[in-house]
Length: 206
Ligand SMILES: C[S@@+](CC[C@H](N)C(=O)[O-])C[C@H]1O[C@@H](n2cnc3c(N)ncnc32)[C@H](O)[C@@H]1O
Image (cartoon, rainbow, N blue to C red; front, side, top):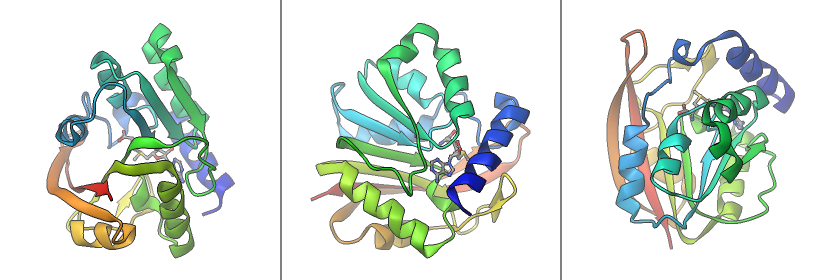
């Protein structure tokens, strides 16, 4: 998919569906919050949520007093929805409309978080571009949390094909610079009660 066809797809999703009409909706991004706690990062850590969309993760991070938050997504519609929901506190978040495969990071981060975004990159060139950005953006000693559909998870999401991963295949994607410090599976229940099996992997850069 090209940058612009991806953007059209996702803007259309966020324009036509309500927050709880998308399979990935969570009241609270509990698996991600648990893994962030595991990293031991303090509230002054610079955190980026890649493909954060309209996720409520940012709400909980603000409540936990994290003050250096960036949410990146290629859909301006999704980020506007999150901003509107947050009201005044949205002003303390950096909102970045960009495709992660072509984005040029202008700062570095202590934590890169991605839930259900990398798995949409089915093309090897896009996967490599993602990893290149990740390596540019994550500080030495920084952390990476990636959640994708597991090998026994769905084959498609939002009408798009995905690539499914286990912890070993995610580790292979990132390479030897990143130590796998936690691997766990998660069963996400969609708003309509279907179960989707996810793989989460947390890495520490050395
Ligand atoms: C399944 S949703 C997950 C949203 C959010 N991470 C969550 O857990 O609720 C995938 C998100 O990734 C965004 N996205 C897809 N491809 C992207 C890309 N190449 N660059 C940036 N964002 C992308 C979509 O706009 C959408 O918000």
